[in-house]
Length: 426
Image 1 (cartoon, helix red, strand yellow):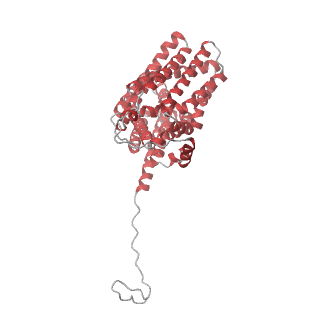
Image 2 (cartoon, rainbow, N blue to C red):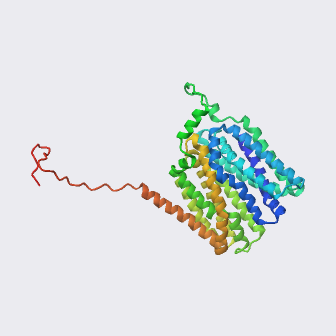
């Protein structure tokens, strides 16, 4: 697990180095902000359309093999992009193709790497492992963004893609040496040899199991978790946009002020992930409570009259968001049985890509008509109100129906009661 966390830290730093310069590269090639959105859509489309299929493939294949192959392919794509940028051969069409290939490979890589990390710890330590992954992601984001500004300034844009490719290769080199807990635990009792699984038996078993989407929709906890996360993702958490507009607009701050707010957000995210590591068995109710509390703080942040108060509110808001995200990820990866977890993550990828694409346009409209303060306040009220409505509906479903009143029995003529004498005729 230490090796895996180190590899993920390197990979996250490389990914954020590339993401930092990717939009700038598209603008340099096209001069159009619309083309930037189109490149993001090309990369997201495979996850939206094929997420469930990718998760099913991860359930059917060895995770270490899938993760090693996908990481290697992603490295080759990054190296190809670096070479094209360095020799000024990258066109808009080529960039779209490379973005689509990256998105296609990610439909397999995402579930495989997530579940592979879970395999390295005992079940009771899974919440701590997921929390550690959240810390690694946050630290990698900070390090990658900072390194991109230095490295790209010294050596050019292609360096970010080269560094990202090397980070993928580092992960691929570590994977063969990982030892899942199931492979190292001593057997407690003799296990009978399993019958050989042929392609025909595998296909027969697959036809008996429910489809990915059908299985997901039959799990009320997963459906509720998806609803909470969708609301929070669309109407909150896009703080890089809403807080930037609030700080530089109504609060009359500058770039340095927004940098302070962004740093506090990052610190709160790391602190929340560390705190979430103490969770043993988080529930959807806990996720909903934390998300609603964060939404209330978001309303207060939108109405804050000063930068000082906004900064003071941003820290607990980021902590609650991080703990809620970690708890939700733990529920998502532990609620389904092991043989269906890849499919569940695949369905989740499709759904999250959908609300990830729908969120920015909706938030942009809200910012246009209500301003930064209104967008934060209205968004927070929508999140808290939606969660409260869901909780009330859930309570009504679970409330037991009142027992029916006893209906008097009217005997028919000649019927005998317990004493053996006939009832009188009615």
